[in-house]
Image (cartoon, rainbow, N blue to C red; front, side, top):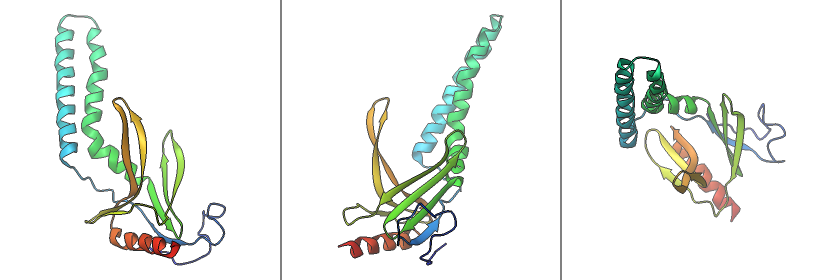
Length: 179
């Protein structure tokens, strides 16, 4: 969906700078897409849940309710299996993208987290990457996050969009107009 109007669109009043215009709005695709990493994660989840189930059966033979403690691990295993199939598409269904003539916005609305709107300036120094495909992605920023094994870099952009090449061109135009 392309927007050429220079007045703030509904819901954008007070969020855009004076004179800032929306160039493009869209959403990521919500189809289930599994890569090698997703399949490996699901296999791990299957073994995790399978071992928990085996442990629960063996513990139940001893009598008592001790076997119930294995249900937590079983549910975690099921969650690991289901995340690529249900979790990621759910996140994408609750994500919206907007590109203005100066910034890129990523909006999300998730249970417990609520509404979030993050903006990323598009400057001549911004490193743009086009992952061309159907759907494609345009990467325009990165963030360092802390994990269990130290820090890691996360790519930020408009992921899995049908108009990736067009949006990349719009961003390159913003960069050229800034110099």
